[in-house]
Length: 494
Image (tube, rainbow, N blue to C red; front, side, top):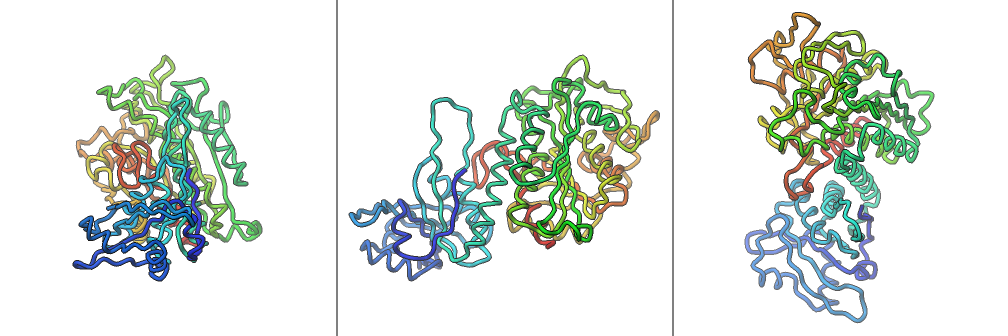
């Protein structure tokens, strides 16, 4: 990933960069440069250039992400050119757009870029994260060396830049995991990656496999379709440094991630075929959960966090579960399987029940690319959020509106609960007893049966976890949605 660092607002340090990006806004017909104005004045004088004249020449509008290039010739300094970047109305959303557009401009180039685009403390981190994410690239092409830009933001807020670098690294990690193809990324591989990340960050990890999964009926039922290497259940724990004795007094957050490393639909094969090609991303919830906890040792929030990753491949084979099977989940609830392509809720049910019965969480989250219904209802810009805690929902919604991981509070409609009834088991898992046409809602109602009395939040991220185009902060493919939302919320608890 690209490097990201703070650059002190000094002329000598600035002019050693290959490129300087200067943010501008347009008020009526006047152009303004809102960040470090004296530094920009010195730059204009040193290189004998009028940035406002240049913008008038280009007929600039100031819209978000508008970029103009001005070549610079100097025998004294390394500076090669100046980028003028439109900041729109300087809102958080506009700064994300401007930062990511600038990142794309230098993506794949081994250049040093210094950005003079923001000065307000509250917005430095937002812009810097977006700048870094805009440079994201991932592929397995042979013979091509990936060039990486070195990014710096002119600011006196070095701590904010450190936070931005940590968060961008976590999002990039989630994206890399999602993009990895499933002939490489099976449950064992993903558990091994989690172990490496845990070791790098001094996190405690346990990996359950084979007979250790005896009580996890949902994970075994789904993962049994691909017995080599078979499913995994991963538990990773974070505690803030120096808080061992008093840690029991700290809030305990448990995050469950759906980790289906590939989803064929099983016996209930996905149709049409095109719906299957993107299914390497069906572990985006587990990737986001893992990436989130990987950032916490650097950020040191005064919160205990446990991540549970339910990992399985939903394959079509002779050992695959069948429609009409009855399985017993962790904790003893029996479930009639109706459609094997609704496998995500089966693995989540085990993990949620495990958390409720063993971990005593103050907050219990799950993230899952769970239903196409959520995408139909909200598109790809919002995740569907389900919780009974309206105040918590408001907080999460507000955080998402600021940082771009947007969530919309959806109703848990109790009148639909009879759809979960089964003639032969405690529940049927696809809510086929009713005809409510609310697939995301009934999936959430099913999951709620396994959380006890916990303060629970379900995030159906099927829409925003994957982008169909390379636009904004997101590349085509996995986005790392949820990482910023969870990190910002967890750190707000400190």
